[in-house]
Image (spheres, rainbow, N blue to C red):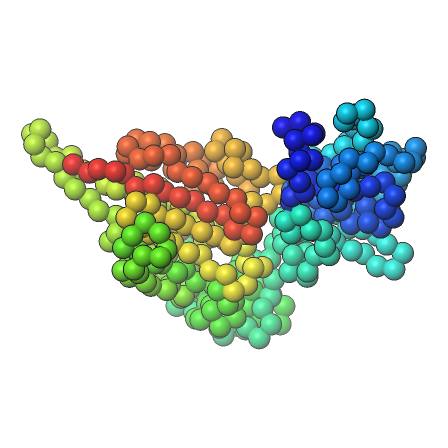
Length: 386
């Protein structure tokens, strides 16, 4: 799309218009918001309503670089002079956002900006936490939960894990050794507070401390959400206890059939078992726990299964990179535990193998949707069985 077409289309989450007469604070806000969201372009010399006005200052490039260096780290800008119908504009591009979050160092305080549609604004505390988590500078999973203690962990589940996968029995350890072990596993933090990781994996009642820490499954009789709900179930216990139950429940809605007409028994299935398992485990493993109150949702329609996880793709991760097997772990410790339980392999092959499994089963290609605040995987059902 050329510049004229972009201007005609108007501002959106990655395109911003500004006249060069605006104050530096306004430019800082727009540049910081674009950099902390997904990058994009600021067209200088165009009004907010899309009128091409042109440039009135001859120091704009130096001015933009000075603004970029008022951020920590400095925002990498690519400034390009362009002419539209004889009128000179600047196309200020931000493509490399690997250094985010970018904080604007004003004279009075540090400010993190972000983008909501075509509007730039100051980020909330929760959004700032997500920025740091996505940058791998902070892993929210090891944050301690106020009010949650070691006593809120299910010690039967913890001990089963240690016995089966670490060859350790909690009962053989004294209190101090138990506390040190749980701390080393990041299930607890200082003062015996339970962590997000501990409550998610082994909590007696995770939803008590993490609203939305559950999986909601809805089965519809038709192909849209206005149709009758045939069945609905909420899984809200510890992840390690619930995960096999979730997979078993979904299997009830994944019809199998068999064909013996050719002298040998052949099985046909609506969704490949591997694809369903991998999609669900990925949604649970990579969900954004800073988005409290939002659950993992699994919707089953007659023609498709939709798995939605809170939190979009982090930082430089893209759907194309995922398809080639390049992975990013938002919750690396949770990933390690699921690896121990043999739910994941940690080789980044999950998405390519989902695509391959769907193709081999005769299904249409799966759909991957990055909604910014959520990530969605659509498994299209096989049209016909035997």
